[in-house]
Length: 511
Image (cartoon, rainbow, N blue to C red; front, top):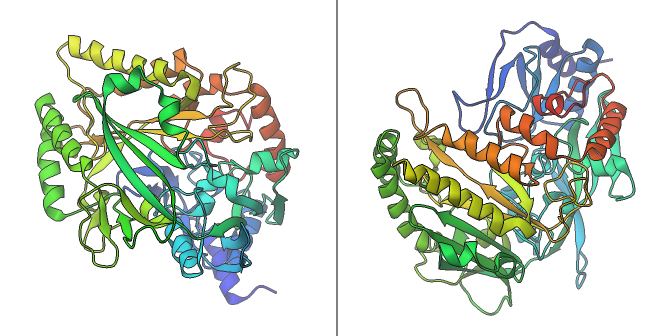
């Protein structure tokens, strides 16, 4: 017999509710799903199971959501009967096993556990998640589902690389355990599932003894990167990336690696996304006019470049700014960090953006970046100066090869390209004005850039950072055999198609 709590949960699924958007982290006006009937803020795996069972019985579309790490309206299908299972309050961590002297161990984490929550828990237990991490404001399960990754070629960078097993609530409301097994298509599909197999309820994750790292940053001339040894700059380090400043024709090159814990007492903490009220007001006053004036965007890039040249770190124990490179500190604090306690993230200052991210074989890195420079120069010849309108420039990331069916860094695919050395990711965030029609400066440039790169290079889309149009065009670059194999697993896990999404439809998984 169902409890009163279960009855109320199920009633919420079956009652008619006026559809409304379900938004990304950017809030109102930035839908991840255009119309949903209900959002369930669940607090247990049992609740998730009951919702899925009832939805399956009624043919109700269901999508799981963590912290809304989305930019566009591709998370759901366009069915207004869709219900959202919001997982962030299902966040227990248990069964930590890391024996003294062991190289690694495991821990069990539930669907809503974020990177920040897990990092703090592990640090308090003298452990870490290594380099398989992304941003503080993303759930671990969400990062696995959408193929999230760190920037690294030497070390495993896919978050899924740390997963030892997944408990997935399938389309019948059953919990199915999928163990890591590279010979099993169930695993190769679940490793980057896009949420199309079901709800990731729990994961067993690989952990390591805690360790300290350093961060170092240098400024490079654009020509030294575009015509240089890109692989040689990135591959030697545990994690490394570039930030590109196209107006100034410069790159920041940042790299990190492990150091002895006794090397420094410094405990650096990196600031990601947070800014002061004064900084936000200044940035908005410049960038809003940049919708019309290239000179405003040129000014912004110049200021942002200067600010990003200094360490974006504080000493964690005192909150004092760190002013010199290198910076030292504990694993997660330096590699990711989070918000400063006296600041807010950009989107809470009503600063918003769009982005696009595409991955290419690292063997084509120079060619790809040179092609982007050609497109920038073609605009300049028309008197249109393109710039970065993001606080840290254009993010150029990298990924170690990792085999699964839908990941950005998989290999041995039908395009004939060599992905075995890893991938380069071109991640181009840009400011979205609040004024006027909301379009960016030279708006047409961005879709043209994406189309050119997709048409001219072997490339793969990031699964949360691209528009429907980009996914539609990029599908031709994906391995048909991988898509067919994933579709078979999808039909096995979700025979009624209740976990359908726009991306899944574009990829042909419901034909």
